Image (cartoon, rainbow, N blue to C red; front, side, top):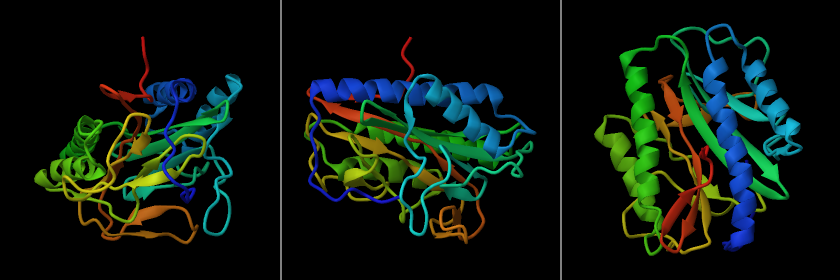
Length: 261
């Protein structure tokens, strides 16, 4: 997936409201997937569930048809198992089994504005290492969001993510990063998960970014498989992925991809 090359676009209150709607639906789907992801379900069934839910609300799947290196992404959700880091292509023959971890990354378009989020799920009973990986990756996202404040810099977000992951003995992927988001799925600025505090783009109210730690149980090196989409860990270690769309506000931030009750 590629960035839309342009300057950083600050969002108005009205634009953020549209992104809030898109984000809420994205979060709802990820929450509902917790109920259906279990041993025996195929990755294609996960994708079909997500697309049906999005279209039932007269919204548009954000990932379907996104430009890639050699062909557009062919599904509405990226579904990545175990050593697959991101962009796994759903398939009827890929059936989850107990002990797997599976990452689902998806997005929604509402009135021309995007929401984007990801979550990694345990399938049945998983290993202690896998459970710790999921816990730490989600925590690294939380710590990154805590630094996404007006006046801070992207390096503060990146450093918080990296420190949380590495202090637990894991590594953060460096070849793929988070991104700005708004009228396009991928906008400026890139949002890395590694870096030095106090450096990088200054955060200001109106910026909306997708923070998405991709954390490996082994080394950080990855490579793309022959399908030209699926990214896997070079050493075959497990990988987890959590993501939220976050708006920078005058007084702090707002996570747009949570479910509000």
